[in-house]
Image (cartoon, rainbow, N blue to C red; front, side, top):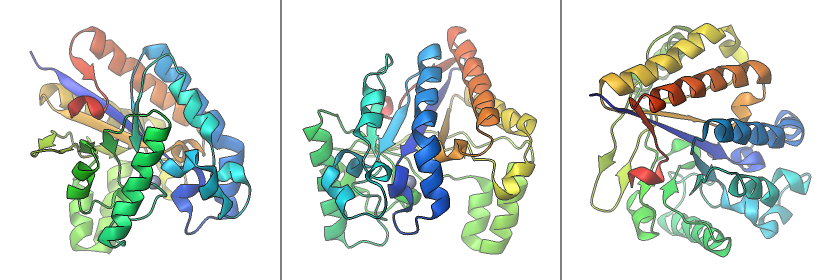
Length: 285
Ligand SMILES: [Zn+2]
């Protein structure tokens, strides 16, 4: 029998996701929507008893880090949001999305080490295990440093067909990316790649938000892509690794939640039939 796997990882960053270009648009949405979206996500995961990986920016738990940042503290410091996840009935995997969302491909080795030290320090101080890592902006770099800091798994770059094109030609890549989003093309499923101390579980698909050109993607297409991801995972004995940020729910929030919940209900039905295992990133390590 074929058994597929589903993994969901969520990058939780609030202001840190755009620390280098934060705009009034970000500020407004973080203040008005972000916390409510996290709560709603947790309710859905509770309802279907689904564990996910929350990749958190460590600075969200460090009041000192927020002191150097512009605007209100609640954009940068959010211990109550993390506490909400921890006190959820379902035990989620608390991973890391870096110390302060710095980009690993732009930092020196020493700066990368300092960022990881900060993240491990904050996790330890708050009694959180740290097994899973998601690179800020998915800029995978110096993976050996992760293992040195006790991290056992990271989310590697999406190997979708349109990404491959983009690596060769940025403009063609944009067109391909748009086509991929607008058509009910099945997302790639992945398999974990194990090396001595570290596992790479690449992402399959971003549950993208409905903004800009993406608003032309109707819910049917979006749901169909998600369903195809599950079905390919089952038929290929592989993993459908879906990922997103709370910000992907800022626009057309109701519709986004409706699609996600239908998808989760489907996954949970497959799981009760023994066709699908729903696992966090840490459970692969
Ligand atoms: Zn991020």
